[in-house]
Image (tube, rainbow, N blue to C red; front, side, top):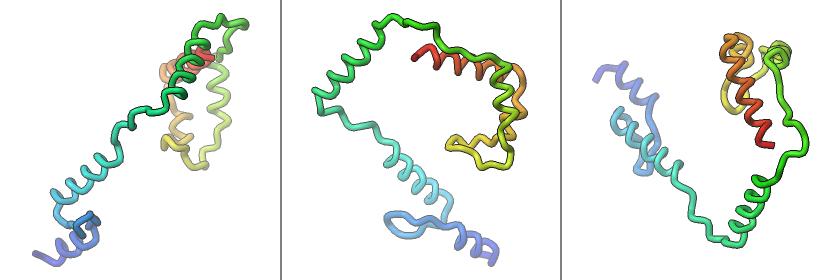
Length: 123
């Protein structure tokens, strides 16, 4: 093994439950195991009273007739807000930087407006 490969393997190692791994296939297995342990289905709900209360509240909310006109937004309003965003701020949890939002095409902004209005209809 050449010095370059030795250095690369040394620098790009992963810690597993069984120690350090260097080979790409072993690293892939460690990564897969980590994802599998992180993304497990939620445990079954065992608090039946809480589940019943939640279901009743959801059903009540779904059967209520809206009393006011739902809140909506327009494309012009969304564009105005996007223009005011500061580009030198760090991205939010989704990783989308403000500069990306400022360069969205009109069709995508319209889709965003429709998504926002659909969310407003839920309330």
